[in-house]
Image 1 (tube, rainbow, N blue to C red):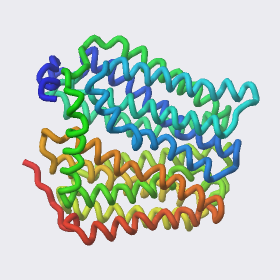
Image 2: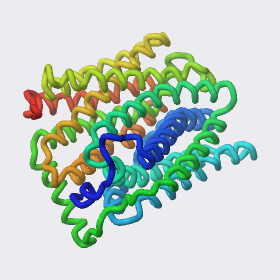
Image 3: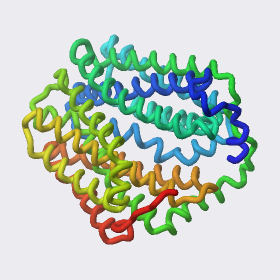
Amino acid sequence: MTRLVETAGVDGRRLFHRDFSLWYLARSISVAGTAASAVALPLLVYRTSASPTLTAAVVGLEALPYLLFGLFAGAAADRLRRRRMMIVADVCCAVLLATVPVAASLDGLASWHLLLVAFGVGCGFCWFDAAAWGAFVRIVGRAGVTRANSLIWSTEIVLEIAAPAAAGLLAAIADPTLVLAVDAVTYLVSAALLAQIRAGLDAGPTAAHRLRAEIAEGVRHLWRTPVLRTLTAAGFGLNVAAGGVLGLLVVHADQALGLSPEDRRLGLLYAAAAGGSLVAAVVLPRATRWAGQGTVSIGGLVLFVAALVGLAGTSVFTLAVAWWAVWAVARLTVNANGITVRQLLTPDALQGRVNTTGRMLAWGGTPFGALIGGVVADTHGARVAYLVLAVPVVLSLALVLASPVRGLRVTVG
């Protein structure tokens, strides 16, 4: 890893050089397309099946590959050709998504097909993500990391506000399959941009026999640090709820708000959630300096439960929009705060392994939440499902309150 950083021959004072611009544009285009597909796929599944379980399964299947393959993809990105990994992942995602409008035009679209596409796109994201972030420092150089990260995450939040709203509108005016056709094109454009990068993106040779020992070392550090262990477990509980809640957005909109899958306002619910994430991203650094990371985690978990109760109890669209924004503030606050603490309490030599492991375990709750939420919604409705999904968050809150996280305040510098 040291050699990777040292050989990054980029002037950190000039962020928008050719290779970073290509990487940044490719990733931004792909993020916009993925955010649009996150609206279109559940809409299509709900239209074809009318099943809350299958609709929620879309989110679970998109997240499952990271749980299954995350560590292996990260290791592969340090051993294989990263540019080739990204391009192959993009092309595979484009082909998968293109099969949906083709099947629809032949009147052969089925729920199992859509779920297979969701899982396949999740696999593509997992391997693309590992290679992209593995190549990141090679492209921007050590001096450009902070500015590049700020630009990337800010762009992503803006795109996640605009793309779902546009996708919801396009799906209502035309058809959700058109959204997926456009998304397939974005993946091909991303692959074409990546193919033009000239910089070497690959790490130096790594001994294959060390892989298992290196992974185990990262897991041990995570487990033996009480604060990190607690925040990872709390993140798992939170993402159990998040997977179910997000997977049932279309179902909840239909059952509680009276919005059909063709209603143009569905995109506004997704946009409200992205807007809440933007608020949290702006407020979080100040909140942690003022109150400390422990208090921020507790406040975020409390806010998350309140938002779920609010969503379960309202039938008013404007209130639902507000509660979706609050929910997103809470979700990003807890997740981002946990990531920050993990980075601050992990030695440099273990950063990659510990953060990959922590992310995989915390995000690993998403598929389970999608399954639980879908099954409960099938039998008792989306409102009850949201209340049930609040339970793992309440348990996470109790765990945090009974741990050293409660008074945590990590100072930097």
